[in-house]
Image 1 (cartoon, helix red, strand yellow):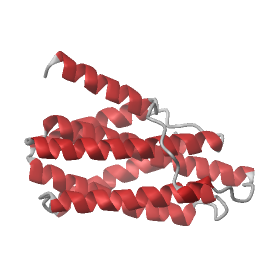
Image 2 (tube, helix red, strand yellow; image 1 turned 30 degrees about the horizontal axis):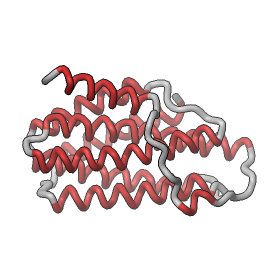
Image 3 (tube, one colour; image 1 turned 60 degrees about the vertical axis):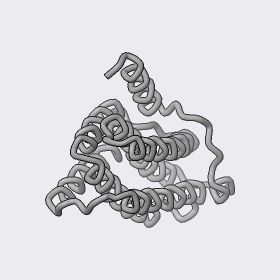
Length: 207
């Protein structure tokens, strides 16, 4: 690993952890203001969006780690493109949390570090497995976001529009990973991923 690679990796980590991402236009539906939320609704929406923001921090780390250890330039480029799109989601969720008067997770450095290592290991297992890991991750995230659409206050049209747009992007990432040669992961790996995701979402909701 060259010094330039290390500097780039550090810069990406810092940007993800601190939510420094290029400004991204909100989805059209998210630009519409809904009814005024109650303090309780704002608190709940901010907590749910904090969980989604942590998910984007983890996504950044996973893709960065997988790009770093990818076996072929094509897969490396695919991981870089996906990371850039997840960076847009990172900006959306951070902005919405701020609007709701909430805060991002205090454990973001930990979330990033753990996910980066996991992504780098997945990349080392070969491009087919790494792409399969992407597909399974994105499927689980898509289901998680569907659950949040059911939990967000009905009047929080801005958060709901952001989550719906993110969900569509995650589903597309999963399809692209399979189309690029991703293989189905064994069920123990899928169960372990779900268990880790449960720990992350439960913790991030509060911290």
